[in-house]
Length: 459
Image 1 (cartoon, rainbow, N blue to C red):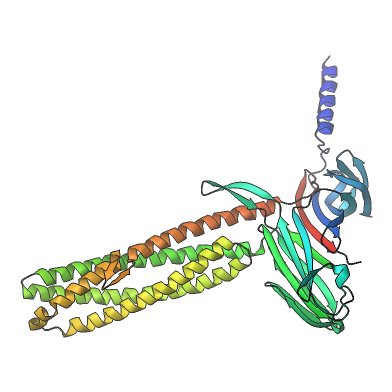
Image 2 (cartoon, rainbow, N blue to C red; image 1 turned 30 degrees about the vertical axis):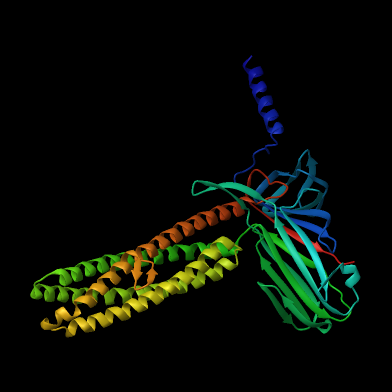
């Protein structure tokens, strides 16, 4: 009876393995890697004619192995290279073999599965839209426009709000020309043209978030284009550098905020001391207060110098952030940084003006004799109003100016927005790492990668 129960348990476990396509276990010294390349063969307009998947399975270790690789939606599967044997087992490719070090197996198949990024291509001959077949062989300038649309919408929570974001893909568009055929080549932003001997290579790089548009413009006689390749990789090369820069930028913002707070408190104190000097009847006490104002002005000037240097550093970081952000197609963050750049430049201008006024006040306070106090009471009253306006906002003469409290509020808002963008970029980075397969991967794979290649063929 015990033996019967034992066999029943064994049969049950085997049935579970087959039901869930769980591969039989093998030596823990063996590891599996999966690398997929999805080729989309298209016509001149970017319409897909055939999608072929080349899958590279690498097994490392020693001993016999059996790998089950998911192939949902893949047909006409056949082995290309390698030592292992392959066979189709339901929705899996079964790969069997023996490894002593490294064993590589390549197989291919075809699929109708929709790609995560769609492609469309348009042509313009001498600024008039045209089909490529009608432009071929003619003289003039042909412009090739590419539009990539990201289809991978993800609903994620960022700062406790649900947002729609797209898995980041880096697109690299490449084509070649023989130099003797070309009169001139121009490319859109982010593109490069490199000449090596008689060969000209054109590259465009961008991120469809959700769209990417780029173009190549070629002037030539008897127009003829070679094939164009577009490689799409789930990644964002600009994110790592941008995330580090954001951390540095946030530190700079906090430093400026602290200095501004000190400035605001100092201005309020100076305004109060001027008020005592203006409204008091005791000239000696007033002179004493003016001495305190002089000391405060000295602190003010030193603090303003420090603030001026901090703003210069922030402007440099801002420029660096703008350059990094341009590569990510993050229009929201780019707009925020451009706006912040203007505000920093305005703040620098205000600090310069305040520093000049403070220096002038310092010089005046150094030369004020006791019997002249009454003659400057009216001036001190106006200065008091100006200091209060600078600290809290208000009218100076007939002009309304924002106070340092408003500047600090603006910094607080910018800080919140940048923190939100940083969180969003962390989400994008995780999504890119998560997108590591198109047709499926072995459950026991230690790592897996996927890339997509659009191959535009010109008949």
